[in-house]
Image 1 (cartoon, protein in one colour):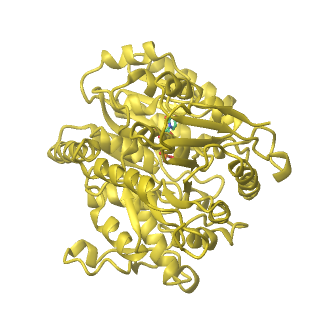
Image 2 (cartoon, protein in one colour):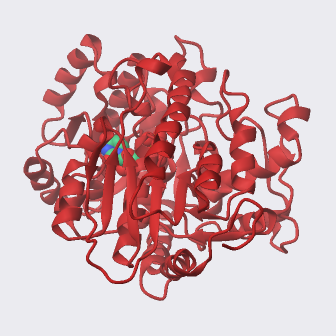
Amino acid sequence: QTTIINGFNNNTTTTPPHVVLVPLMAQGHIIPMLDMARLLAERGVRVTFITTPVNGSRIKPIIGRVHESNLPINFIELPFPCAEAGLPLGCENCDLLPSKDLIVNFFDAIRLFGHSIEQHLKDLVPRPTCMINDMSNPWAANVARSLNIRRLVFHGPSCIYIYCSYVFQLHKIYETVTDEFEEIAVPGLTDNDDVVSQSFKECKLHAPGWLNWPGLEKLPGEALHAEETADGVVMNTFDDIEPMFVEAYKMVIGKDVWTVGPLCLYDKDDFCARIERGNKAAVDPEKLFGWLDSMEERSVLYVSFGSLTRMKVGQILEIGSGIEASGVPSIWVIKDVEKCSEVEEWLEGFEKRMSLTSFVIKGWAPQAVILSHKAVGGFVSHCGWNSTLEAVSNGVPMITWPQFGDQFLNERLVVQLLRIGIAIGVKKPAFYYAEDEIPVKKDDVERAVGSLMGDGVEAEERRIRAREIKKKAVKAMEEGGSSYENITRLVEYIKHEPCKDVQGTEV
Ligand code: UDP
């Protein structure tokens, strides 16, 4: 059945604009969309946020806060069709998939989910005037058309990735270039006088395109079509972090593009709300933050690889040994799915030896709050775009260890263009390595951590650059800043642009 948690006050005399937000059911997509929902609602837009029972229960504390503060957001929990798509019951988020073999089933479920969303929206009162859909939901194009409402695409990943993937697909590079390692000049950046833009090359392996996965061959084309036929694009980035790519993307896509990030800066000073960001934290906040408060400024390393990456047992032990050898205090996140007897046993010894200088979180970590603590001075990250933005927004330099998707391009942005990170040195996506291959050794970790957290000139300059880009990120979200003003323009667009019929005629 459907659960509706209604946050609308229907006693208003005028009809405010009403936007339906449909995220991809994955943490890195739900979290920023929820930030966006609150930002839009604060600026006078009614929001309907689509979720599922399992995902809804993860964000329950946020839903509670939204309603306490009377924000006009309506959360709709629709059943996720697990059984119909051959998924285990309750497998409603990418991070709950027991194996990557079920990714195709997961996208089948998403397509079926689209049908129930359509049914639901047809009867929704007040009627929605606009949809904002994650790029991974191309079915939304038909739904918006049948409801005769405007549709915007939401991009959770970086613009450097969206742009490179877009032009590679446009220029048929995915089809025509066979060597995945071949460096190809990225088209469309050369109008700019900047030397970096003129020589910017990338290989298919690092710009792998949207949803490039066996069994999902039709999806990238459908997603591209849905992007091209959308009324506009909303991106979780800000102009100053990747100006060259934002400009080039706007040129090539030829429609309204609103850069509205970093969305993670929404409610940045509300500790209680942020501690519950995305899921319930698997750690006692008092204990964790009491410990962090006792540590010296910028002395602690935070190690976490997002919600989807799963490290092999041998790799986990190399990471731990490297952290230990570096002598740097740390907070290290191990996922529930990574726990096994060998890891647990090894961690027991690690935690004993490092009881004063290390904190292991087993499960979900309150990452956004950890990264904003003044004691945190470095982040070993897989370079998921949200994690990258969270590091940037807090001026925390990174050790970059990309795994798949947009993460290699995000690494490039962090290491080469912004120069606020050190690459751990992996060149291939995680699934290219053999089952028994451990790409990063203890010494690699120790060396990178030493360089990042050390007090040499390079490390200090990196910190200075990280603080500079943090200032720009914060400024972008403040009144008068580029993202703040783009949100204003987006709200104006939602309020005033007329609906169009199937032929594009105003109605
Ligand atoms: N996250 C968190 N705690 C965790 C793991 C992840 O709060 O233990 C959050 C993280 O702060 C980020 C999101 O989950 O907002 C992960 O998104 P990202 O794009 O970094 O990586 P993905 O999980 O999509 O690979």
